[in-house]
Image (tube, rainbow, N blue to C red; front, side, top):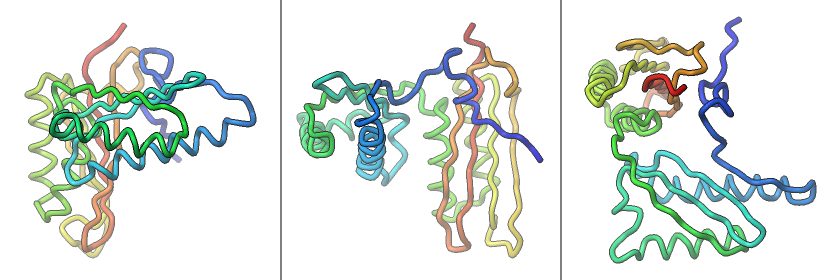
Length: 209
């Protein structure tokens, strides 16, 4: 049996951090976890027409919830004259029952964000683009953006085949056992007529320490 570890959780406290940062007593712990999940679902659902959200960080203090949205298209999230942020803030305050502060941070190079790359491939597969072309182009764009290595794997009924199979493309090196290595990872799902196709993306950006 292969023992697999998520590359991000494996590097927590080395050079990566939790996406939810707060401390709670026994009474509030389950409630706050449920709230965090709901917040992420609302934000992801609001902008799921195309891959734009790279990450959502949540920090809590006694009377404030700070939510930082990392996005490739800040203009889409902010809206005209900040209307999008104001509306989203109102929706999230109903979930948290606390004042919410929204920070929008733009991702400068979306080709180096595993979540955006994986979701972009999944969207292409849903539009019936050939999987080999989709993963090769994504890998090439990531390497051109300055990555040290990229690995993309798709699994499922590829090209509507009767049997599910797994295909992958690897460019450069992706040292998964090296804790110093800054490896970004994400899993996305493509809902096709033949069933679900899983997309896994590892991006190696160099050593951090």
